[in-house]
Length: 248
Image (cartoon, rainbow, N blue to C red; front, side, top):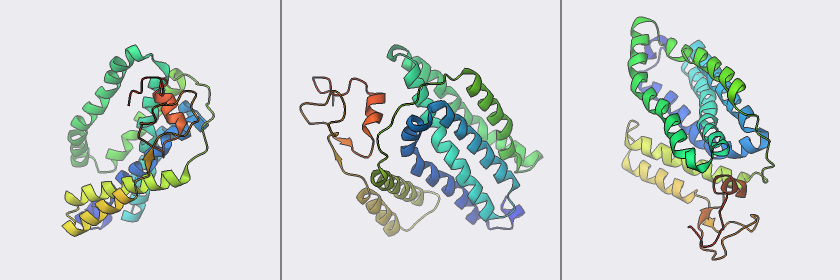
């Protein structure tokens, strides 16, 4: 890829970082978007965004274009996994969650095992463009399957979007992810890594008890939950939140 784009192999690391940071930044907003626009619509939009990003990656002729396409891929990737899990949590009883989540997790474990081998084979015998183009038929099958089998769940009315909390939480995720990458492949100086870590921890939103907006609230007031996540999040994932005795 570096040879085709006329870039140094070291600069190609920016394509990985762009995807990783986009995912880290947008995952916290996925639940609110699913509540606001509908889980099935957001999930299908995520597949389309990821597929479109893959097509743009294959058509890229410069490193800048490739990085921008990877950001588009990251938008789809940030929405796809959490919204998919949310659909499962809302459609299956608790007694079946372990079995269903285990079944859904299998492709996520098999993919990273087969991906490097398949990617190397495609690069060797075709071209690097095909490591992105192969996502297009998979995305098409995913869209058709979601349209056919995913239930059209009733949209919920989410609370007001917490922009301040989202920006703080997103900044913390990005800075901490960048710091961890700096310890590995990026090989940042230790002082720079420590500075990123401290900045990420400083950007963390404050924690405390949830505001009294749920029907049942922890009467002991000992629950320390990040206030960046709206109350609807906890009402979705923890329907019995606030029931006595306090489970937290």
